[in-house]
Every structure is written in C-alpha cells, then in structure tokens.
Image (cartoon, rainbow, N blue to C red):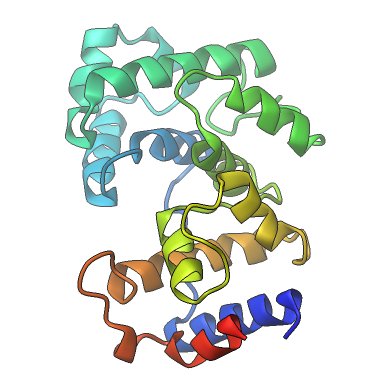
Length: 224
C-alpha cells in the first residue's frame, strides 16, 4: 500500500473510532504557545494548573508575563515541574517575540512572519529551550501553520506497526507524514491529536492493549 494511502487509512480509522479531538486547548495563540513550552517533561494536567495560575495573575499576554520578576513567574508555573528551567525558557521565548513581532504582539501573536513557516520554524529552533516538537506545536496549534508534530507516541505506534524504526530522527519522522499528506493544518492538528489519544489509551509504553486498539487491524498492512 502506498504511504499516502496507508497514512490516510490510519487517520480515518482513528477518527472513525474516536471522533474529533478538539486539540490544542487554549484561549489565545500565546496561551497555546506557553502551554507547548510548559508541557515539556510533564503531563497536561500539571500544565493546566500552571496555566490557571497565570490566568488568575493576568499574566497570559506577552507584555504581562515579561513584566513579572523571574521568581514570581517560577512560582506561578511551579505545578508544571522544572519550573526554574521553564521560567528561563518562557523568558527566552518572550525575548524572541519581542525581536520578531515587537512589543505589540499581544495574545494573538500578531507580527510574526507566518507567511514563511520554514523560516519562522528555523528562528524558533534557535530559541534556547525550544526543540523541534515544541517549535512545531507552536507553529501548528498556536499559529495554524502546516507543520506536522511528532512525539514519543508517534514513534511508538509507527515502530510497533513496522513502519519506521523506533530510533528514527525527529526530522525524518516528521517528513514521513509531510512528504505525502496535503499541507492542511486542520488535518495535521487532528492527526497528531488522534495519535496522542491512541498512544495514551492503548499503545502504552508498558502494558500495551493491542487487542483493544483501533489500529490493531492495520498492523499487517504496515508490515507489508
């Protein structure tokens, strides 16, 4: 089966079984970007608590967050874990916004060069603490740009289905999708969200539930 057809089949199978995901949660592009940074090395429940603290402190705009002293920002995001490291990462991201979009970017992240997604991605990857997964999450979920986010769930599912080795580099894993799928942000958004849901509930690192997984019937197609 051609890769484009195979990937569309995986997508349709997950969507039919699980329904739309409505992901990524966030009221503004800036909030989504902050969530993408905070979710590194933690679960989303912890991020939600940190975001709630920031909202109560009226700190979910670039200007308001930049005005916070570092210790205060660290206190607010403490539930997300690694709060000192993530404080530095948020401040590096705020400096990036100020350079690229100016002080009036606001919660909508206006002023970023979204017409050139690849250049913007390269600039994001130069921000200290922003790796490929975080950069792609910001581009796709906060800015609605056509880039595919891949993660540990993606790697695990594809390797268990014989589509790619588990140690495949991030960029190769990302291009596995982007090479053959239409560059549609809505498709990329939903596809990744469905992969996360399957990975969390069935294709778990330990004690996988393959016999209950909606993708189990496709294993032979992947290996073939």
